[in-house]
Amino acid sequence: MGPPGAGKGTQAEIVAERFGIPAISTGDIFRANVAENTELGIEAKRYMDAGEYVPDAVTNLMVRNRIDEEDAAKGFLLDGYPRTLDQVEELDGMIRHTGHRLDAVVVLTVDPGELGARLSARAQKEGRADDTEEVIRRRQEVYTEQTEPLIDVYRKRGLLREVDGLGEVDEVTERIMSILTQVEES
Ligand code: ADP
Image (tube, rainbow, N blue to C red; front, side):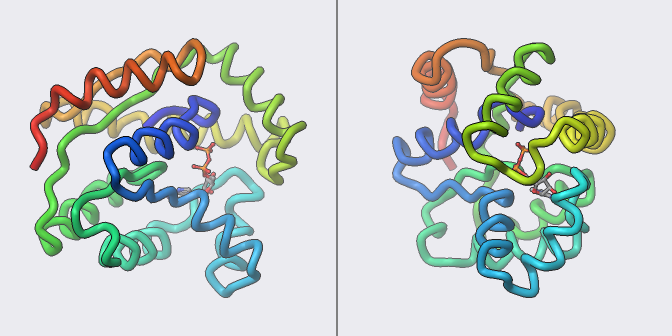
């Protein structure tokens, strides 16, 4: 978890690779569907371009199908999911069904000023449709309203691992790895 621009996607890929499991990024799956103009992509794009969350029913079904795939049997790292309280409950149900257990929830914390700078830099480099100033502001609001409350939910469950997201990519990776290698695997 972490606000837009915290570096979730970058770290998720590296960390998942180190553990030999897939990184499942809901944002990436949505973007791939948008690029291929699928029905899901057309539906998702309306929300993404406005900085809003895609409706839970759509997102939940997509994740449910993805974690049922064979490469996720041994485990997986979720990037950008769950993001709402409804998704937290859905995920609990899904993994009860697949027999997985949630081992840890990593939150990347980054100072808001730095986040703004990173997102503007990404907008220039990647040209993501949702990296305009107005949409960035809305995504930050939606994160605060809908996703930040999840931090307490997972803290109460004893799963939360807070990691400082400031610094070089490698430094942040090492911080995450040193925490996750101490977590008992299910
Ligand atoms: P970031 O974390 O940088 O905002 P992501 O790539 O994770 O970007 O997500 C981009 C967009 O995809 C979100 O703004 C939202 O519209 C949609 N999205 C991704 N994950 C979810 C989710 N779990 N629930 C609802 N919408 C999502």
